[in-house]
Amino acid sequence: VGLSLTVEHRRGHGALYDAVNAGAIAVSRLRQALAGVDLPRQPDGQLMLAVDVSAWLRPNADTAPDRAHCHVRGRGHGEKNQTAPGWPYSFVVALEPGRHSWVAVLDVLRLAPLDDVTAVTATQVRDLVERLRDGGRWQPGDPPILVLFDAGYDLTRLTWLLTGLPVIVIG
Image 1 (spheres, rainbow, N blue to C red):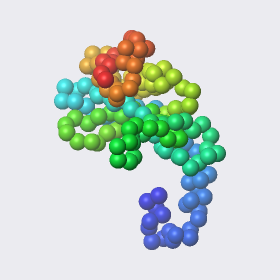
Image 2: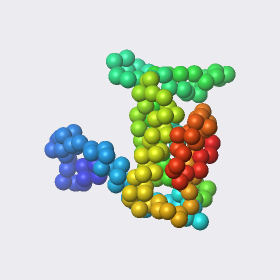
Image 3: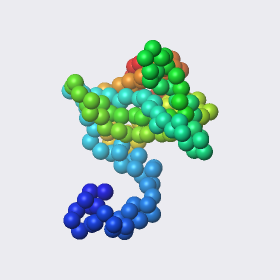
């Protein structure tokens, strides 16, 4: 995309856009590559991951496949939480130490309307921890990985489903 901003590429130059549109992302290779990069760590060397679901709201896309009802905060004065059609995505990020909002996105997964969010999230975290081990980012002897879950997750069930992993579940 940055190349399209250079002088040599005019707005009408379609080859760059054709190349991007014809490309494909090998998702499994991308996930493996992300698990191998240097990750932010806490001062004691501990990894801290955060898990949350965010929605891409699509209220007017009536024919979009696999839309679900996503929870949103009330948008008007005095309105309570409500739902809107869209696609929920489960994000797992590595948190930087300190007081700022920078994160390293490690995994994103679109949730289907009938998915068991707790089971899908546990599988997502389990697979990521295995990739972190394979990529040398967590080794035996390292502190356990802190995994922070936002409100709404079944922490007791997640703890059970993540048994055997070097993680501490926090919610």
